[in-house]
Length: 200
Image (cartoon, rainbow, N blue to C red; front, side):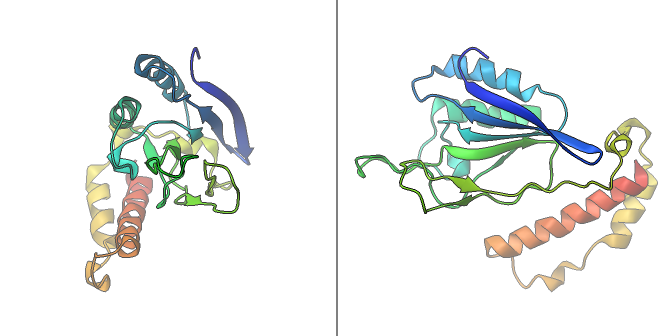
C-alpha cells in the first residue's frame, strides 16, 4: 500500500480461516490515492474482515453528507460484492463539539456472513468512539466445502428447496422496525443458504 495504513493477520478456527485487517485512511489523503489502495486491499482472496477509521462518509452509513472517499467505497462495495457494517450512532465527535457528527469507523467484509451489527462503545474519552462486533466462524465445516461450483447448480433442486423451506411471512406482524426487518432478512437468508447447500 502507498497511502492507507493497514495491518493484516490470518485468523484460523478449525478448518476455517479468514483475513482480519485494521485500516487507517488519513483524512488528508487524496481521493485517488485512497481508491488505489482500497482496490488492492479488496482484491485479497478469501474471506476478509476490515475495520478501522476509513474517513469515508456516505449517506448509506448514517452520514449527513457523502465525501469523495465515501462515494468511491460505496461504488467498490457494489463492484467487489462486499458488505459495509456500521453502527446506529455516529463514531466521530469533533473536538470542538460544534462540528458535524459522522460515521467514519466501521467494518467492511467480503465472503463473510456471520458478523453482528457493530455497536458504539461510549466508555472512552477519544473523539473517535470505538465500535464492538462479533465474528462467527464454523469450525465444523470442512474447508473444501467452502468452494462451490455454481456452474453445476441444480436449479430444480434449488427451487424445490426454497418452496419447501419458505417461511410464512404472515408471522411477521409488520416490517416497520429495524428488528422486524432484520428478522425477515435473516429468515430469507437462512432459506436461501439451505437451498444452496442442497443444490450447488
